[in-house]
Length: 342
Ligand SMILES: C[S@@+](CC[C@H](N)C(=O)[O-])C[C@H]1O[C@@H](n2cnc3c(N)ncnc32)[C@H](O)[C@@H]1O
Image 1 (cartoon, rainbow, N blue to C red):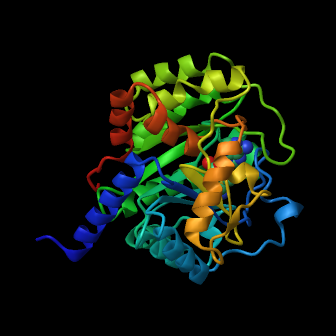
Image 2 (cartoon, helix red, strand yellow; image 1 turned 90 degrees about the vertical axis):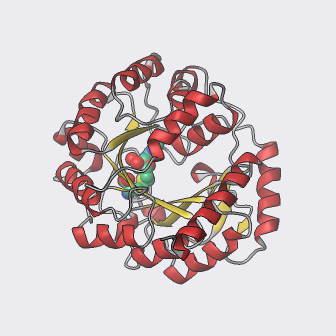
């Protein structure tokens, strides 16, 4: 029997596909809050600079969802800070899920079977848990919290068992740095044993005062070779193929932030990306979304930044503008395809 909900989801997907083909704004990073129990060496959201920043309320997220829908739908990636620290996280996911495609990246610390089931029932399409090293001590040390690795792996198992529909996916995600390339194959093997899939993103030092980390120049060849050997590694091969160019020649340009993706911070301010939050073009809670869209486009046109090759940007640009379209589309299908409930 076809349910009303399935018809609405199909209509939402059709609108998303149309937006994608017209190369419109298809991805939003939403910084829900900055609180986090971890003290990652690669992130500054837990520092004094963000300490007193408020979280968006579920009601504000409802307004954001409504306003974004006028220029959407989008994949809305809920992050921060630690999104599962938000007391109304289930309402937040639901508010986005009615009009968009909510996905979430978390550190796993707060995942329980009840929370995991509620987040998926509220409409999350994908939940990724960050794991930086296969070696628990190295992960815990990077994150500044003992037990972080154990909790992340437990969370992945719990999440995988809590999915309510086959389209809901659970991934492990690793930030590729100068000192963890050797850890990636063991992490992929771990994913295989857990029945989940694996993604990576490239380290970025372009916000705040983060240390430079010299990722090896042959990173692309090594990652693409791993992808060939391991079907669980579902990152797009075209995205991985540009890591070396990014670390070796000062970045990848042009950047399509503002045209195809943007960032919304904890006050509703809209900017090109997470690394340009201090240059907002407007506020999605207060301004006309169509005006915001125009300003984002104009900011994109004058933007010469090439500083990062993180997955939010890299995956979209690979699919929209990269060569080798059929191979990348096949990878995208593998990343998002329905997986039977265990
Ligand atoms: C900022 S965190 C927020 C979500 C959650 N607290 C977590 O740790 O997954 C979102 C993602 O960005 C990654 N990340 C943190 N610092 C980064 C950096 N400097 N460059 C690239 N990715 C980074 C994290 O590892 C995580 O996968």
